[in-house]
Image (tube, rainbow, N blue to C red; front, top):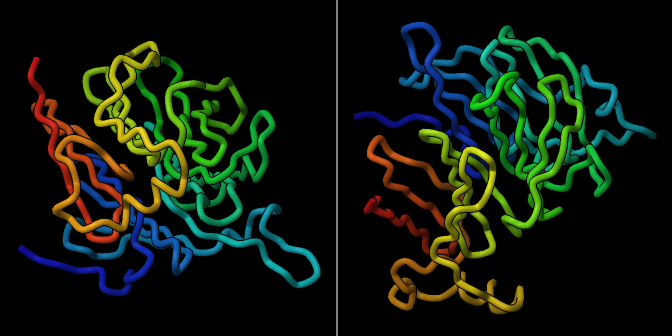
Length: 253
């Protein structure tokens, strides 16, 4: 039908669609150019957020500004925008629906409330009040926050390298870069672990990524980087492999 976005070459990463009143909009993260942009479905710019210079966390010291490489975005019911600086300084930056800066929280570390590569994030509206769930990838955990950035708890033992989230009818699919796709139920308990590649070392895992396409085993994952449900409950999985790979998992029950 159309294509646009050549200016995001090399950095286009997180992409979210959201219906606002009667119109749908796309929110795109570009980690290479350090921007988050809101667009119509035809690619027309609504607004673009650049380096979060308003945040005290990004003021820098001795003339050195902290790295900023946003990877994903989530939107709260009130329109607040949460940006994960996953490949940069591991902060979460929050803006209101008018793209005005509100606060920064998180930051690199392993302690409560700290993050290491917050690669993806999701506003969980299955509960009241909603909470922000973060794929704290390099810390091998999911971490939950209030919508004003206060730590709630961890979800541990379900994923090794969680990347992002998609929810349908209470179930949540999580692509785990360490060769599997996990499904959580409404109580955040793992009810399925799909396509586990079962690589014992990082060397084996990295080597598998570089293989020719005809060596890949159907239904066995290497590096799931994104996953989402369709309207029938099937799951599409996109993997981070050199030749590119998309898998469809068909819902059978």
